[in-house]
Length: 320
Image 1 (cartoon, rainbow, N blue to C red):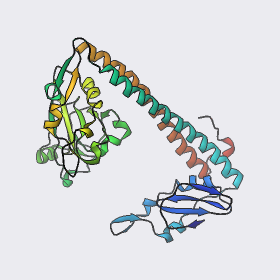
Image 2: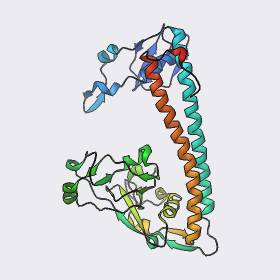
Image 3: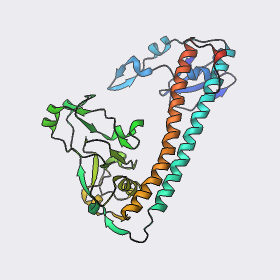
Image 4: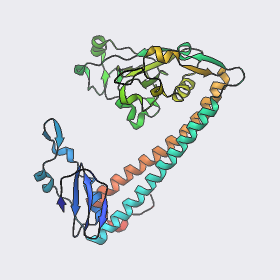
């Protein structure tokens, strides 16, 4: 195996070996290593665990990389491992493709359901909800894994458990933190979304599952009695805030812009029907993602067992 410095490149295979990018350092193998088997093994080496740091950036010293070891079984066994792991990877990819297709159906269906009909009103967002901005979160109070109130940031929206409702936070405030920070705590059912920078263009929308606070990069809409919070989520999910940003070096929206957005307001019974339909579609998407997550866990356990030789490759089944 040869390590070459260079820019990141995709995996390429050839008769003399292959090249695979490992944290921007391509690895070229020759000889006994099956290309995909070595790639699988390197996927288990945590380069960041060496904790090498230079000029404020995390990097890996070549000497430490060369010192890394892994088990290299005979080529036929390598090929069998690749076959088994590859079969799981194919199933994961298929599930993610199905989830993406269902998400597209959900987007189209939402657009159709929100077409105004008899008894609908055209209103401003400010007529349906109170806009609340977040507040800066001092570093000294960050990092608590538990407490009385979760303090959400944009990054928390990426957690699998937070795909719809914000339930898991990397930061919590205890009673002392609440007294010191004085966060703007919003009730469950508040619709939350990014309002600043690149995060705004992700067009993420979430609901608070419990009384929560959030930082200055997020905004919340606290619905009034005229609108169901799930319906408000659907309406806000149909609006591209990135098309409404105010001029400036960093794209952003403010309370004035959001409050003035015109949206369709269905009668309450129609809102409930729309929410029910959207719930069914979202459940399908969530089920696909959950199954893909289960397979990732199976893959990780199987790979660990195969490489640690606690599972014999002959006993590994392709059906999972």
